[in-house]
Image (tube, rainbow, N blue to C red; front, top):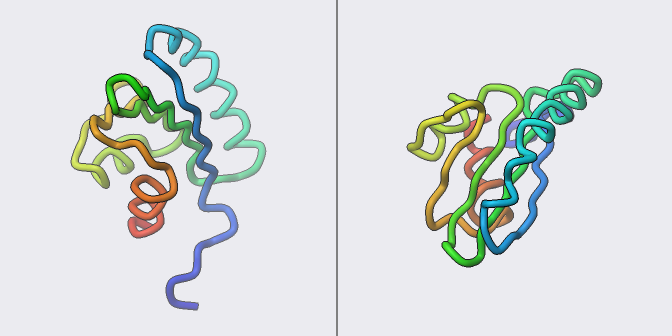
Length: 101
C-alpha cells in the first residue's frame, strides 16, 4: 500500500529539558534502546531530547544513525545527532523520518 508505514519501522520518543548537562545518561539510554530495538525487531529506535533554553534537540538513535542524520542534513557522532532549531517531534522530526522510509 503506497504511503503506508511498516509496523516494525521504529519508535520515536521525546523529552524536554532546560539544558543538556543532564544528558550524561545518554550511553545507558542508548544501550537500553539498542536492546529494545533488537527485542522488538525494529529498524530504528530514537530518543529526542529537546533543550527549551537553546531551542535545539539532541537525537539519540539505535539503528542507522548515519541514515537518520542524512535525513536532517546533519552528521551522527556516537549515535547522537545535534539538531539546532528543531523543537517539535510531531511537526519536524517524525515527518522527515517517515518520508525517508
